[in-house]
Amino acid sequence: MSKIIVIGSGFGGLSAAARLAARGHQVQLFEKRDKLGGRAYVYEINGFKFDGGPTVITAPWLFDEIWEAAGRNRADYVEFVPCDPFYRIFNHEGRAFNYNGDHQFILDQIRQWNPSDVAGYERFMATTKEI
Image 1 (tube, one colour):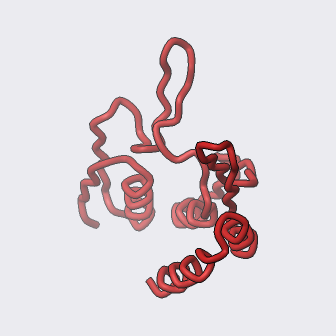
Image 2: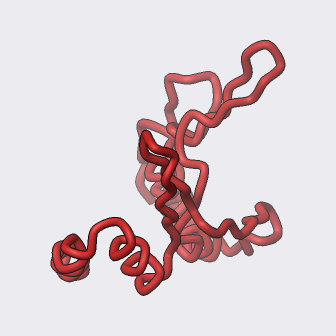
Image 3: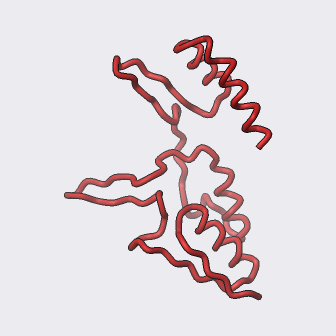
């Protein structure tokens, strides 16, 4: 098999390295930071921990596929804790927009903020589905 170098240990680099190694390739992974994870980096300042990137995983099945490609079960290594909503975004008046993975719920949220934006969101979702 081939010798392959993967540069960067974010989600993409880690998943590429895992898939390649599972296929029998000799893989070397290089990361400039002191820890793996890319934007999923956790850092600590004065005893407080901060997320450097993603805090919500909206497509957990993609992680399951990576572990399965390596002959493993993701649940044996990592526990995903459900979070609903994924995000709660506030405007300057303190009004909240809740975002989760349910299409109808998101449409209802958009409708509450500005009903005329619903059609644009539907067009956006249709376009991204094609991609």
